[in-house]
Structure formats: structure tokens, C-alpha cells
Image 1 (spheres, one colour):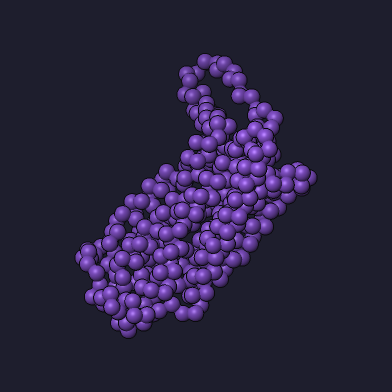
Image 2 (spheres, helix red, strand yellow):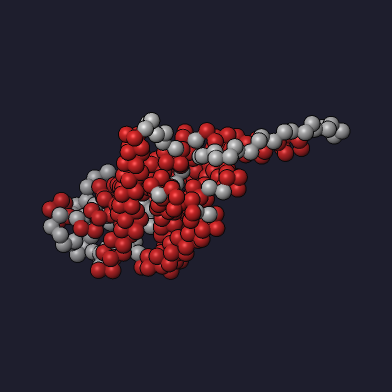
Amino acid sequence: MRLAGQETAGQLQVTLPFTPNGSGLSQEFEGDWPEIPERSPCVAGVIPVIYYSVLLGLGLPVNLLTTVALARLAARTRKPSYYYLLALTASDIITQVVIVFVGFLLQGAVLARKVPQAVVRAANILEFAANHASVWIAVLLTVDRYSALCHPLHHRATSSPGRTRRAIAAVLGAALLTGIPFYWWMDVWRDEDPPSTLDEVLKWAHCLIVYFIPCAVFLVANSAIVCQLQRRGQSGPRPRVGKSTAILLGVTTLFALLWAPRIFVMLYHLYVAPVYRDWRVHLALDVANMAAMLNTAVNFGLYSFVSKTFRATVQEVIHDAHLPCTLGSQPAGMVAEPVLKPAGLPRGAEL
């Protein structure tokens, strides 16, 4: 995925006016792009550089902390949901490193896009593979929660840590394979020609793989889960929505909302107006990409808000990381008293 700011950073040395292009609206919406395009001014300016720097500076440490906490919970409980959330967080970390750091900040802001085209295209494979892995691991989590609530006997008979790890490995391998065709992804910030048939196929493949198909799965599975909970409420006491189910609904809803602008703007660019020449589409894609990348840093807040168990585990991780520093700073000759480790999670504890 070519982030909007990658070419933006290379334009920071030139101040461009905040005005529409001279091509005019009549040319932009006639369907045929002019033969001599005029470059779209960068309206966002330095804002994407600041935004992605803050996102990486705050989001990466938070995701690393989330990874350690989820790894402890997965080792203690051996629940599939923890393994899926752990894999989802790892995919978010890869996305932040590959897309935000390497793709935007390094190639765009530091090197000002003075990178061989073959290297840029090769980086596309890792960027799209990271996106595909993150989205489809969320699909695995959705299917697991649907099976656990709607078919509990079958879920108990077939669910195991080994099967969960194999499913995650299969998704990661498929994500890498599906990222290979995007080596030929169109660079909307450089290419002056209208999208070719290959560009159109790749754009629709991207929209289907990362948004339309996953959202269809989310909608169907989540609707079935909600209906199942309602039926249980009609036949007895009102059922309690589990922490795993609440987290699933939050993760899928945030993804659908944060990625919707990018998908809309991409299709608008494909069929209506070019990013290269229309400053409004340029700005819209900048904002849409920033919203989509925000999805890699918000899950920690969601987990902390929903799950008391997760909050307690995060506090334990921070305490364990702080303890060696405290002991190392004590004067020589002082003997540290033993510290009791917090008890493990009770059997049956849920995220």
C-alpha cells in the first residue's frame, strides 16, 4: 500500500498554493484524463510526517507491551482467542514497521523517494502482505468466536493451541502469497497515465481482500452471535456478553470504520478523478490513509477498556520490567526482600 505521505515528503521543500488545479472540474469528470496533467499541490504539507511519527513513537511501544501481556495470557490459559489477538498485534507491529517506518518515514521523509523503483515495488509485497495478515487474522478470531458461541460442543472438540497455531501460520503464508501480485501496484503519486486494466484488477483485488470480503464475514458472523445471545435471553436470564465477544465486536467495528474512507477514495480515484492532478482527492487520500493506519494502534485501548484481566496483566508486565531496574539501583550490601508474584489467572478466566 502506497501511503499518501510518501510522495508528500518529497514535496516539502516547495511551497505550493492552496488552489485547485488549472485543469478545472469539467476536465476531471469527463472520464478522459488530459494528455498534459498538472501536478496536484500537497495540501496536507508536513502534517502527515508529524502524524506518522507520533503514531510510530506511541503505537509501537504500546503494541510491544500488548504482545508481552497477551503472550503471558496465552501461555496461562491456552485459549485460542489469546493466540489470535497475539497474532493480530504482531501483524500490527509489522504493519507499523514496514509501512509507517520503512515506507513512509524512511523512503518518503528521509530519502525523499530517491529509492530505486525495483526496491519500492519489492516493498509493496511486504506492505500488502502485512495488511492482509492483520485483516484475516481478525477473520479467524471472528470465526472462532462464532464457533464458540453458536456451536460450543464442536468448538470444544476441535479447538486446541496446536490447531490455532497452524491456522495462524496458514493465514500468514497466504498473506505473503497474496502480496506478491502487488509488486506491480500503481504509484498514484507518480504515474501520469490513467489506470490500466492491471491497475484496475489490482485495486479491486485489494478492496476485496482487505475490506469487502472480511467485512462480509464480520457482518454475518457478528449478526449470528448477537442473534444467539438474544435467543438465550428469551429462554432464560439475560446472557452476559463475554469479554472476548465484546473485544471482537470492537475490533471489527473499528476496522470497518477506519478503513472505509481509504476504500472509498481509492475507487473514486479509479473511476472519477486522479490523485496526481486533483488536490482534493490528494488530500482525501492523505486523510484516509492516516485513518487506516490508526487501526494499528487503537486495540490496546480497546483491550484495556473491556478486560480487567488484560489490565492486570499489563500492570504485572510493567512491574516485572521495573523491578530489575529498582534492584540494580540499590546500594551495595543491601539485600532485596523477595517479592511475591501475583497468582495466576483462575481457571476459566476470560479476556
